[in-house]
Length: 183
Image (tube, rainbow, N blue to C red; front, side, top):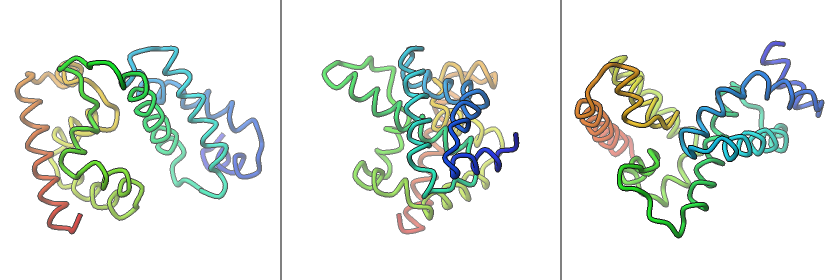
């Protein structure tokens, strides 16, 4: 089934849209959730919550890309779950939710309000397209897929210090770019 037909099934309130989406995108969404939560059961619950959120939001929302939309929902739900589970705990210093690294740059209150704005998303996409391919891939693996620095090192064959420096420089350049663009 084509993705457009799948979106149409959501709009038509056909419950098969949920099972087809789960079959098609479960491994993608579970990878995102597990990178954030490190717990398979929690990740599966987040996937189910994301599918429910998609069911409740389509319509009126009509995503251009269902896979990306489900990934975004899974990511948001997983981050919320992580924060709730660890609200009273001390998180090991080596583990920081990657998005929090970006929040430091933009500001927590602005991130919550601005991430949903299509203009910010468009500007970030333009910035990412200007990067060298390996810088863009490292950035996306860290901040979209929430991969650990260690898994990024293994995936690309880079040393830890190189990945950390690449991420820092890219964040700094993104901060400068967004500031210049009025964010």
